[in-house]
Image (cartoon, rainbow, N blue to C red; front, top):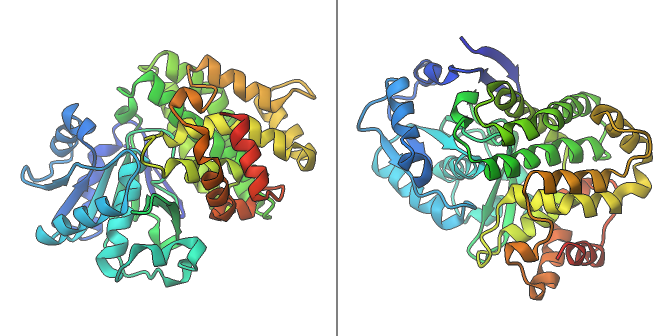
Length: 377
């Protein structure tokens, strides 16, 4: 049996928890669910395994064309299938992309378009109502924490990646089974793991007053700092896998407090379709330069982070995370990921306007974002 956790939403956590999917469908009165996933998981046989384990109907409707970064077009295509199949609920199985896409589907299932009007930076938070179909989120990575997060990040047709925020977007139930992450490749384990770490770090540094969220974030950071290298080095280490799934969960439980400039930059750059960039890898790359930028106003909190990570007093946190990135095999620069300097101004403008910028501990201008972006090219 899994452990039952109730914090923001209902969470089934533990190895083998996926077997309780049918029970949760029944509890939510979902009779005709649609699975939202990606082609990779279908090809690996994981979706078939979940269907068999949870005793789901063999002819269950499946949308498996989730893009690497979920888009407005994908939301509308999946929504059409949802309506065509007369579905009455959603099961998102995959990483943050599949879960975020499912959140977009449930939003537009009951809310009139266009999608952009519901973006946080356009005052959309107040427009999102409670009347949405139920969603069960089943993460297969340990990073985004979207299974318990109030946000969904979607790229619009104009290539702008925007955040849609509401407590009503938090999935009805999260089923977190570390066994589903066992086959995650080392590089993806590293990138998603750094996403979890960035959530814990940025939430803790957010200037909003929320001691509960800060405590959760620091515990998540401690788990991830200790176990991410092990999960990358030995994917079958289920203790490390379980600890990373909990760290990812904690990062998202905590980021109700707000994130910061790392995510502002990642959101802005990640929406540009010409590059096809992984969100977690971007967070890893941007973390050192943002930590240097924020250091003048975060002395006390940096000291606490060093304590949690077991680092000596005065250790350079930015350099520490740069070394961790290298040890995990992640790129050190955007150039290594194919990014070119001609997008600097666009990224700076969108970063400055991003919803995460408001909770960065140090005020940042568009020029500051351009400088941070250039530093990691």
